[in-house]
Image (cartoon, rainbow, N blue to C red; front, side, top):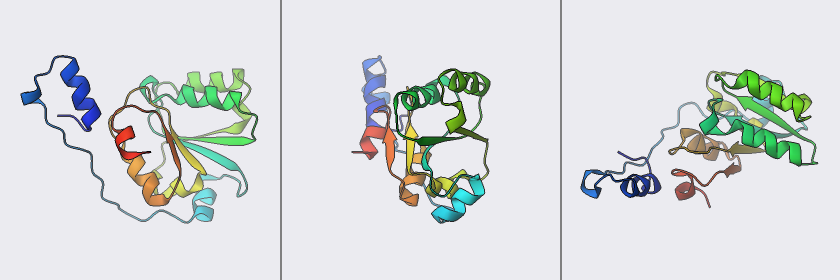
Length: 161
């Protein structure tokens, strides 16, 4: 089973017989509606006027949170970063952010219940994955009307232009 056509093609190139492959694209059903922007920012404790870039996901190498940190270090703009999620890489990422000079611009929110309701707090959501399927957070960000910047991996190119 693959969650995107691109992943099915990759599996076939790696030797899985095509007659054994089935693609079932992820689907999503909204729960509670997203909070309004001001309320979502208040809940996350971020300033109303920040240019806020959000990352929502597991803090692990395949999800690429370090890629976002590296990009932020190269941008002169006064952006603030919010990382929502936990993972074994968090201590190393916090250290790296400090070493790169962006530590003061990063907020580590940790695991947040019902994080999908808070996506409107972001000016843009970044999915900097090295590998991925079709993350549900893409659907959640679309429902919240949040612009998305994502790596061209897994099923993301099938959903985003």
